[in-house]
Amino acid sequence: MTRKIFLLCVIFITSSSCSEFALLASASSVAASQNAYSKAYGALDFGVVIKTKKDIKTHTYERVRKIIKERD
Image (cartoon, rainbow, N blue to C red):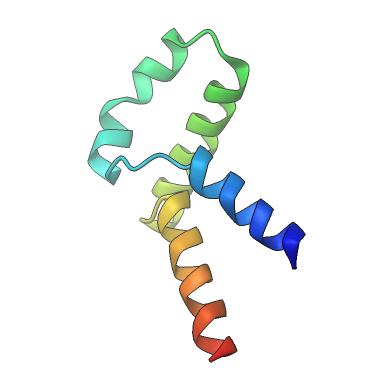
């Protein structure tokens, strides 16, 4: 249980709060970043937005809400 909570905290911390438009507009700034993790996350998030019309943070939020709803 503690492991799941820690994982959720890590996901929330690393997830950005940008809207889809901001992510699309900032796609070129990913190349300017020097951090490899930032580049990887930005590319992954950009791909998820293109494919599913939702960013990683939205998917995570919906999944957590579903888990909490099932628990109650």
